[in-house]
Image (tube, rainbow, N blue to C red; front, side, top):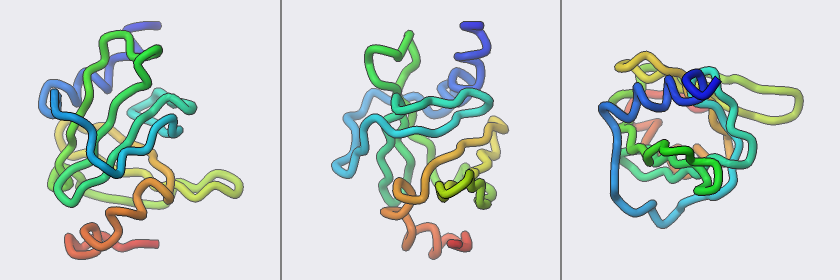
Length: 121
């Protein structure tokens, strides 16, 4: 179970691990998915023009390092709505991992995403 919990996060960490401090627009205790694992109110997310910062709330981190995923690694963004919650699925090109993040989290990167050719729904 622990292996499954860490698998996709560790695949991303091989290329995107960081020791940098979170960005200023850092949102704590968000919900979202990295690969098959859903992080309910334990995902910390920061959006900056060049990258997405992801970390896990320290109490639940279990050795998972913070990540800085460059926007250039995102190949596709599509809606992944659930009931009344607007979310987006982001496809990372290498390694092939899917992220699901809420609209409110991605809103701060909207202009940059549009300039990179991603349609904003």
